[in-house]
Image (cartoon, rainbow, N blue to C red; front, side, top):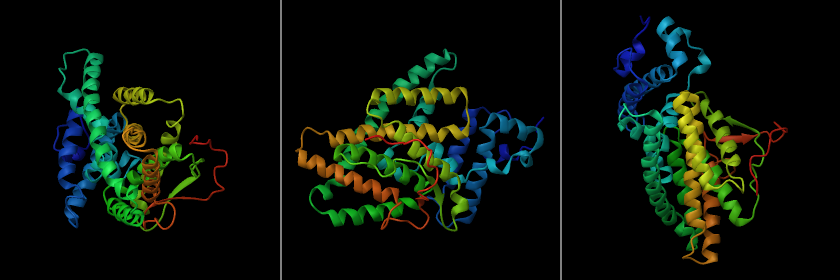
Length: 341
């Protein structure tokens, strides 16, 4: 018996739906109601938020069990994430496809669903991961070409034009669902990768605390943790001895672990790992390109550093009205350093 079936009705599924059925129903309906596709449509925004609420509860086995027995009122208020964040954590954003492509987690899940259910689970996972890796390689090559073209104006000496173009791009992307958090994540990683080539030191060597400012703060509250996780994960995975092969193993393990312990809160951590790995390949291809001179490589590194700082948006003149700002240099003095030279 289910006390309240409203969340199931919102997604258009039955009360015994599997996790795969829940995810597919959410993706299809949320994509149609997505704010980026329905600007200014209040009804679509309302539907998008309702879908996110239903998805958050039904994808968490514990919360789903409580909901089935007691209804929505039993769910703690601090459990809810903003609808933008829920969708972004699982599926990213169409606006960012040129920067990160499709998340490995989403690709892997799609392949896993196509495998025969009669097969041994480990065999299914291995086969799905092998197919995923092939697509990830294509993703890296495609994004690398796009990024080389994007930073070429800086290499050609058009620094001011490049800066204005990137700043305009960042402001456009910041308005996308989950945009500020993805921009911050990309910015942190670009800066770290460029610093290794420029022999500089990343200024965010210690996590302080991250705060969302402005009247939209309540809408973006879950991005605080996500942004912290971006800094922390990117830094930890950028150690000198942490090879791309090791990072691939980390990503695979995190995805497989998620399948055994499915929780919404784990999804963003997986995607940060994926983004960092993706950008590791791309930045290496850009900054270790043997077909261009050392001068060009240095200019490319400078361009990536500039791109990262604009995307991160935490220093003037790149502050955005609702951006994620790192403040209070005196806080959290005992936190571990997250970046190494």
